[in-house]
Length: 297
Image 1 (cartoon, rainbow, N blue to C red):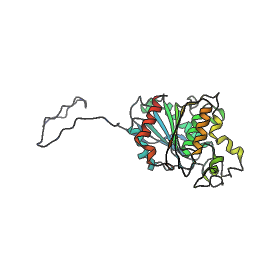
Image 2: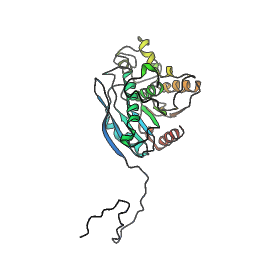
Image 3: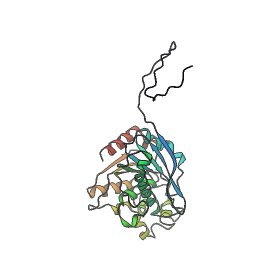
Image 4: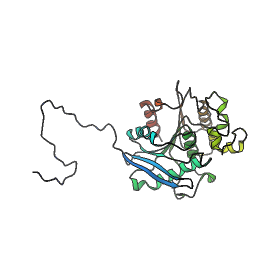
């Protein structure tokens, strides 16, 4: 009987045993080992304790804070985990965030929660063993709007809180997947949904009000209002399907046009024939574009 060896994994000896017909494969590292921290509480609100799912790969790699779309309502996070894990498999550190839905709190609660998560992530980098110097906000659909709002309003006093106030809410970049940018113009193009009524997702966002009858409530939610030649903002990467039946394609056109008009760094990819969401937004080609975008900022 051989006593247990007190050696490291790297020092453990190679077995010389062999079987006839056995085939040998050389080890390859073409994916990433992922450490998963589940339901990490990043802030306590009156409505709920808010959590994030933290998937870590390499310490030095950038971290993507993913904002799941949910028509501005509470999110159902577990079904999104396999999809978000694809980002971790590409080597990114990923935090998938739960944030207050408009059912519980209207705008700007959603983006305030995202900013709290950004600050939490920066404040706890040493605890979890990642580098928080490069954080990228990424969101789909309503989550895209929330990611944009959080990333573009850093430093604006009325959109900042005392939570983790010693840490900035600034991020290095924003990736927007087919997010709304001006809710008052959602029905100016063909859509399969009413975006105006008080019980519409956009109506819920402003406190269950009619969108067109409440321009004072709508104005602060319009993404383009926070883009100007004078304001410093992070680079923005946009993806949108040309046949989007829920968030009209023109919403991303307005955003991109405003960014370019103001001389900002922005990239816009139209997915020809694509509807709202879908697996084509998670293709290797898209990941290569995302990798290039993040490498360049």
